[in-house]
Image 1 (cartoon, helix red, strand yellow):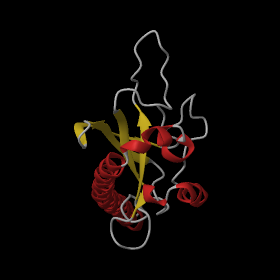
Image 2: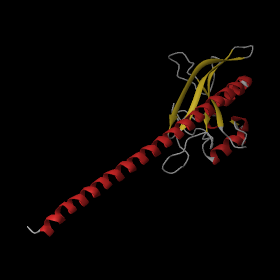
Image 3: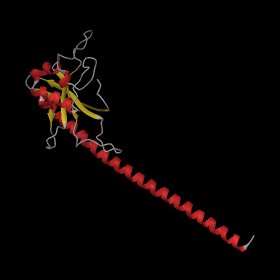
Image 4: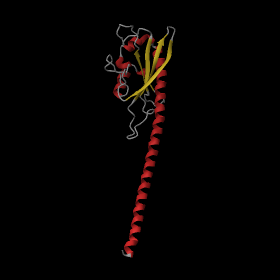
Length: 208
């Protein structure tokens, strides 16, 4: 082997080693950047999810006050689920839809008080709703359009454009819904709210 050939061999091996090291370092840098980006997205989403929870819970308190003050109209509300109940069910096949402009307009035509602006930006943040609890004794079938025990389920859905997360890939509003609800009981001398609260998310109609 000539001296020239032997000198090229270590030089080529060194160059190959350098290329491999640079490739590994670039991969590590890309991984760190991707991890940092995902952590940032996760932190922002977590923060906004908390905002959405607070939005819905504030709406629940407004629902408690509104439907409590209007006890005399409970049966009117319950018999019009297309305006007052967003929960799809066999007895409510065309529920209220507060999450579209057309749906909100239809609801507001009947009762604009079902919407509230929480942050003062002039836009609706929550939709307030009411539905009957199962208050018939067996073997009677449930009668969802009429209250029999002075108790109803009230709730709120956060529909805000500023208090809900956005999708990291497109920055579009997260389409999942958050509803918080509880039992409202009328006691004859006023109204009382029992502390039975539940929340749930969904990516379409909320289902009973």
